[in-house]
Image 1 (cartoon, rainbow, N blue to C red):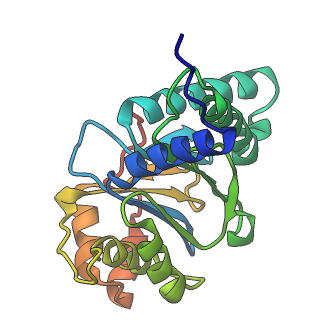
Image 2 (cartoon, rainbow, N blue to C red):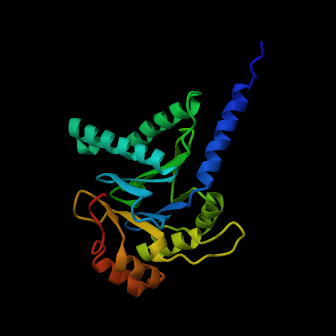
Image 3 (cartoon, helix red, strand yellow):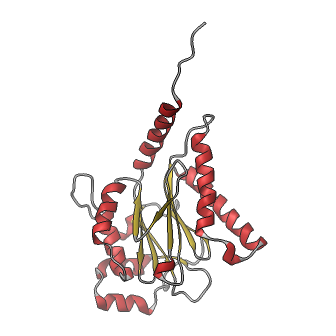
Length: 255
């Protein structure tokens, strides 16, 4: 009779964590940062069918990197949780903090279960408030822990390098054009310190815009509006033009 191979619990958890981190690092990065009128989401994603950034509820959005089928299951579960809670209680009872706690329990249970592999995903849940000081951004790694972020955050790919770049350059009160320029610059940096060129077709961009008069604050930035913002490079004139019709070419409907 052969003796079963023994692996200490600490080593088993370390191996699972390393497995998940490698899977997440293979994905293209997502950047989330605050700007004057809300929260900006920018992902390197040439696909127009598989979204990394999505609406969850009125003021709440979701971004993820890793295996698409895994984080899409989590997104759908989050939408169901938000709809049920909002219908049962009140729409104001649906918060990013509550949703982050639900995701944390799900990811933590999966990560600690020896019966299945850990999810190769890292999530960001964000909620836009009435003012910048009320914005909430939560990052959820593969193990279900919750990190309360402020200002800017990056996940996936070379997230550490991107986060360092953002920390040095992000400031309060950025216009949308300035925030988008900073996000694209950070995503364009490669592991060797060089820079790539990212076009509008390679980007998925969305915002939670607190200035929108309707209850739903999420919108996608698409087409000519995205191209105009990328070309403006944050100049005051273009920022003013952008402010004339911020929702002009954005999608209100979640696919």
